[in-house]
Image (cartoon, rainbow, N blue to C red):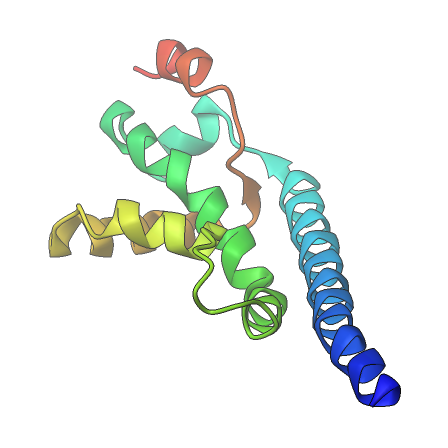
Length: 136
């Protein structure tokens, strides 16, 4: 009986350790993805002009980096979510992005994808206000 009680105590601990390892892997991958984005060439007003992007397109720049990083770390995020208690509400970057994207219409979503494709080689984590001031 003592052995069964001991095993029952270890079971939740095992799940907790598994969840912590998955969370650590998710955080590590997320940071790796963010660093990869930051290592790209910076987005400048000249780049925006070259790709015929306007001041109003800057509102979409804010979500594009989050989408990129979430997509890059998607497998680790799913692995983590599979280890946690389903009743516990956890908001991940993907869920946050989806909540924002759900508020946009189809044309805006298509436009975001086009901007993201055009600027794939550029770091979009920029000072949007400064960039806005530099655009024509």
